[in-house]
Amino acid sequence: MNAQQAGTDPGTNIQAPGHTGNIQPGSRQRPRHGWLVPAALIFLSLIPVLAGAARLTELTGGATITPRNERFFSSPIPVFTHIVSVTAYSLLGAFQFTPSLRRGRRSWHRAAGRILIPAGFLTALSGLWMALFYELPPSDGLVLLILRLVFGSAMLASLVLGVVAIVRRDFAKHGVWMTRAYAIGVAAGTQAIILIIPELLTGAPDVTTRARLMGAAWMINLAVAEYVIRRRPRPNTPPARRGRPAMSFPGQ
Image (cartoon, one colour):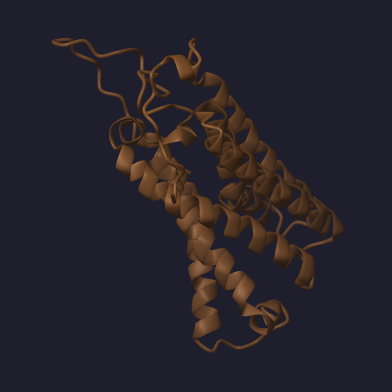
């Protein structure tokens, strides 16, 4: 995800979300809390990130093999790839929602995009691989497996469409699809928050309830993403008429 993932073109005067208009010389603008959103996204990602770090420590530290972690020891590369890629994707991607960085540091966005887009693909592909080939733990079931395949495929498709959009220099659509992909990619944090409520009140949920709650978390994230997308200002003039300077695809 790069500067264009916010749905804006750094070479134009299209304003970022939360921006009320052009700042005129000598005018004063009320400070906005532009760092609240990335801070919230980082906080949301902390639970799965810490859980992933614990899993990596378990895999590399010679922990005791149990029925719950045996599948990871028998095939560690997919889970290792998933943890590293989703950690980079969720934490670095949070800063793409910082208005000041989107508007003012074009080179930063390009550098971030060279990391985020591959990390997103690795996150989606490794997640799909684990869903398909790892043995289901007792707490999961067929419904949750199907949900993982559906949303994992949706994330992968969103990334592909985002890349196609940036190749076509359609910055707005690029931002839309990358926002949706990010919403799916960080759903593990929302799932952790939702699942902890019944565990504290009544104990661990059954297989069906667990699947429903995790599915609800994906839907909540996508609903928030759609809200963010619809709040973004849209350019009234086609990009070709705005004299935008040439831009290269992240990684080129």
